[in-house]
Image (tube, rainbow over all chains, first blue to last red; front, side, top):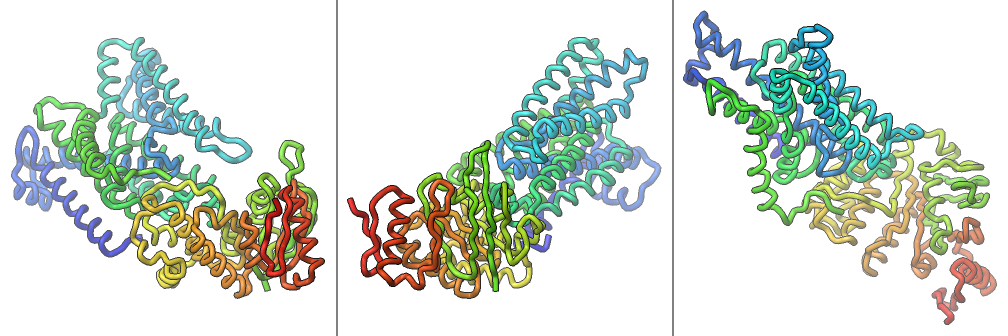
Length: 341
Length: 250
């Protein structure tokens, strides 16, 4: 973080304050509105009232989880784009998302045959295991003489993702109506079941991993020069790639296991930050976390208030909110091509 | 005193000899490697830099084999400019130069000095991907200088540069070499090599056909040997005239 300029530090601090205000605002909104002063009062002193229970049992875990997951996905995307030096890279590129989605389908459908209640934790563990396994498989496919080729990793990731997607479709075909709806909802993402356990996982697993990735800022900057130049500057490129993949896979598979698949955040948020603030990873990763957190927080607030008491899947909203903004930025800054030599 | 030693190295790709067993010793100074396309110049630089492993023999930087250095140690001993610099993210010129600074101490001061030397101060905050080819090349060279190493291995550092900056670059390299640094540089411009370098090595199809210092090259016979080697390497008739200028005989 010591590489940040004072302007960048001020921008980060201001953005964090805005995120905090957004979170407060989000806490006050819902099928039962709680005024902002009331939210602040209840946060300081919980009480035995309906408003307090709604705040502490439903909204606060959800707001915290959406911020942590949104930030984690955006940081994952920024790291993957840096490692692959490719604008289309997203956290799912090395098969994690498709693998985790397959894990969800397998857990929901097979749980019935194994006579295991496809409870939330079973689905979550399955998503995590399948997501991580997919990443390991992609990496092993691309590994030759201790080195992984970027192009092979990309292609292996695409191929394995397609394979996992096909298998997921097969499981969907085998599922009954209720299972199909459950798989569908998980594939579109939802924060509706957020609990304090999820928040704890978010704070104790996701945040430390994000901090580890922030420490990779300088090596990731050096990697922008190309793999051979990075080696010339003392970076062990293979270790960096492997560490990035493992950390990103952890973030994505844990996130998917808690809230399902939320696309778009990891792909687009880092680009928005690059367009607005530049590509240096120290700032890019930090700002991506805040912006990703804000995007998911806003999307989740809309998803639970727009057609309240029903909910819209959050994956639809992240794309609906983010896409027009991203296209506007691309249009406005089209002279500044993001990646060209 | 920095010293580079190449001992009986050879390099094979698919059982084809790319470099045929030879030895070299280079002390501080500007050393230019010349040769036709495919002669093995870039392979030699990659071996010197420790990117490739020799089939036989060894490369030593200050009496220690490059294979025995860790990546981090090597980075503090030698800087490398490759021909391919795939780079398109919008980092600023100052940020790119900063990537070369291995030490945090006084890095800002160093970057400012190097930017000034390379006439890049006005571009400092400009995005790298908005620069022309020649400007990008100067930024890469500035980054190499920011690394502050005793050994520089440069593969065609004058690529994309116009004549004004080619001369500026050769003067900067000469000046840097005079501070006790070892610079090994692959060039295509023989004229500039003759004018600025301390020694010349000529490769032909992986064989070292000439190696010598230019300091004592005043005798006609010496010039004849060099021009013969150059003619042989490039397969054309060349001669070096009394002023030391190269002439192509058509």
